[in-house]
Length: 321
Image (cartoon, rainbow, N blue to C red):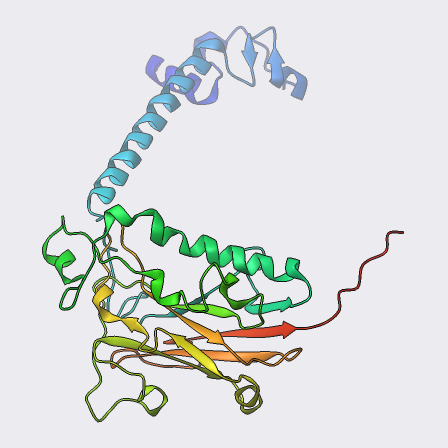
């Protein structure tokens, strides 16, 4: 009986039995529930009851936290910091690389429009700065890369973890798409960077000799990824004008496969719009070509869309009120 009374005191905070015999049975008010001077309780519990339940929950939550940390530790030990747990065919990552472009302004994350006014340097300076920032990483880690000549590629990275990745040389963009020429924006011939998303272990597969798509047939080179840009609609195709591809063969396959390693430099290509019209919006569609790159308009697989509008208008100064 005594044990039952102690349990009731622990759970309810109120003594029962002989300990409560001398107390009034009158119902207590809310104020008395908060603090009952006569019974020596706070919120219906005396000091001993509060001490017991606080100790109980401290132990309970300490064990719960320990169990959670143990589970988290075991889970993290199963992960590889260099390779996703699930990748490849049948996963959300997939085996088909996506295509990206630069300059993409972080200040306008939802916009794919490249728009500026030739007569207003402040309108194209952000694009030039974004291009410069994006490309400076290729010069900053030169000591963590190696020159790859003919017959060399990043295949060594899969066999030798200490091997250095191939260095991507920006010299191919010196004629017309360099920082010195402000990437063509100043002269109304903007350059746009085209790149492929990084997929672990992916490398381009060559087209058979007689199966090269017509769009890139005159520029395709075995072992490379050809790039082709055109207007998204018939009207855009008429307005897009002449496009200069740098390098002409696209992205060299020697920079693949992608392996998560320090110093890896993502290969890129550039397209320069030499005769894009003034004051007209042109929607551009750029596709990457290799036998193992699929194109799907609905999901934008293997392609990217962006808009270019080069204005040539007199800048109207805003008058202060």
